[in-house]
Image 1 (cartoon, one colour):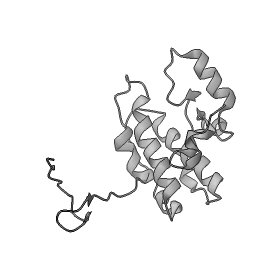
Image 2 (spheres, rainbow, N blue to C red):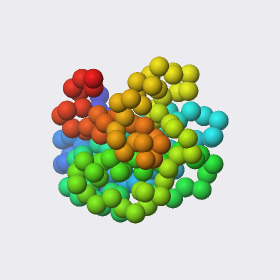
Image 3 (cartoon, rainbow, N blue to C red):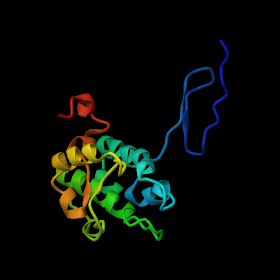
Image 4 (cartoon, rainbow, N blue to C red):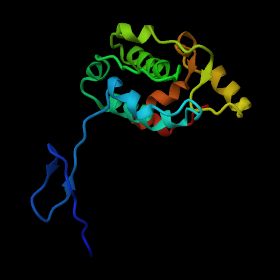
Length: 161
């Protein structure tokens, strides 16, 4: 059996020689999301998916989720939906966990209705998602399915509807 060499970043954890290696990572914070989600304005919002879902997982396994949303995200690009997409996820997660919602969350609303992760050409799916969206989606004008907030929990794999 051939073993691959594992290169570890500073601060990572490794077992003694010959045993398994584990590389730790820092959980994503709301403030860390904008550079990971930034895409040219001509591109669909699908690139939002992985950073937001990883943030939700990190939130759901965190011992201190409030620390993940304490610092506001900053973005100076031309995507008017990026900060509202982060805000609706943070707002919904905080409400679900009964964590105080930071003031910065309420400042972000999309200029028009958006069904997160749904391309414009999928109108039927967009309607389906908006009908079932989280109640806080309406405030931010960014619609998410409530079950998206279960990512990283044992309930994630249960049927959505």
